Length: 496
Image 1 (cartoon, rainbow, N blue to C red):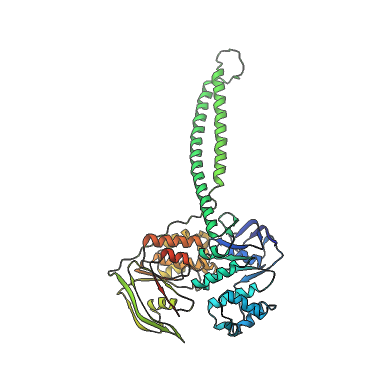
Image 2 (cartoon, rainbow, N blue to C red):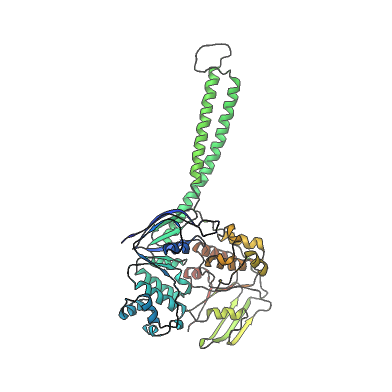
């Protein structure tokens, strides 16, 4: 057991006008299973890269462990999976490898297949196993769930729960609860570490937020009362001062025009006014310490169109085949007000159904029936194509600029982000651009393909609240179990 010490860490990207970290200090125990949370763009991946020594920074980072980053690039994916694992963990024995991958529900036969032929989920599991086979490593695991279906997430969470010595960046609440024992959170004003899982951290955060909001309200009232009282006392003192001659009130002689009572009263009131002003300043200073970490998760809005018929679309006996059959004879209907989630393992054809409905040329048999003049708003799974200026994107999509930017602001975009090129956005920020654009569109049905990939937890909760408040007709693919449980009204399960 040892410590990773971060002392007075300050960092900003070269040429950037906003600082990511300013004079940050904290400690991490290398035996922890540490969940890493924070809004998109706050610097989670940047911090992992700083630990890896990829950027120059001010301050110190000291540790006596080797940092390993996940995911990492595999240079030659045509090699066998076993050769890939030996390149990652050259000291490992085959029996150790087989034991490790069995914990991740990966069949040992994949070891002798080309790594290229494995699904994204299988590749994720293999590379995680390889890193944990190495000794004296502290793993930096950056959003591993993005290529995992719901069942695989449960498997990987159970696997990680049996390990120690890692930082896990994830926005999946259920996943974090299943495998971490500490939470490192990047807040608006600071970085903090708390023992427990995500749910316990969020519970305590809500308690702290509510306490600070109550204290803020109390201090606002106190400051207002003190201002009024100080003003009254000062006015009384001014009037008393104007009626006295200005002779020392503590002298007892009785000269003509001497008003010792008025002078003493004036002095007393002036003293009270100054005391009240001092208490007022103290209250203001106490108030300024509050609310710095309150996350303003403002309500989002959506304006779905009403369709003239209750049924919007249907699929009858649909089968899809590429080089192999993906699924056979799937049927379902989507009625107005439905929120239908399509579930299934990696490669089961979920995205293919969405693309087929959106008009893409997907090889299939069966019947797809789309309502006449049905307006669809589509969010693709991949957001990496976003390039160039945000204003050009707005013009191209023909969306309301004011509404679009207001939605992004509610999703924790700072105004400075509007001036950046979109290729400089984090993966979560790019996905928020696509979600915000969809929310600006008036549509009969919203078709979203894994909309929550890379999106932070608080934004996920905002999107949940939006859907439950405005009840849009929604057809979506998602592997976040909490989101699906809270939002979906119908489910279609695909099996290979």
